[in-house]
Image 1: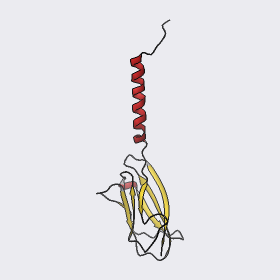
Image 2: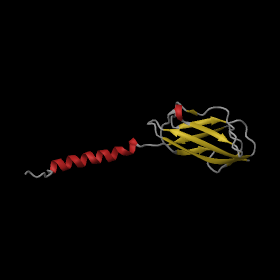
Image 3: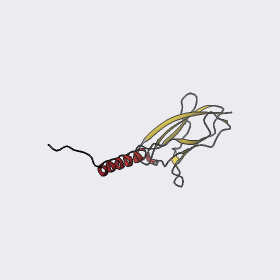
Image 4: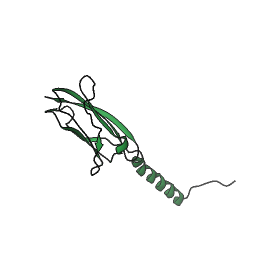
Length: 126
């Protein structure tokens, strides 16, 4: 009976393959998250003309959404959100003039690799 003993070369190859797999696994499971919001989370502002969110990676325009609701849960934006073709990590939506009150931004972002994230944050209009 012959016993199997991994040689130094075989072990080095296996370790190299393992290392490469670990290094690229983060890219495979990439998700996008907000880096900056305008208006910012928890901010009190005059009625903004739009809501704009900068993400940490490019977005898939067809599946990325952004809506704004008032304190009663009614959607206040009429237009659909748009991903900026010049800055594919930025999504924005135009707003009508807002009355004083509490508003919530709901976003769903799909990364260019197809992974989806979502969330919300609030701001107040004075």
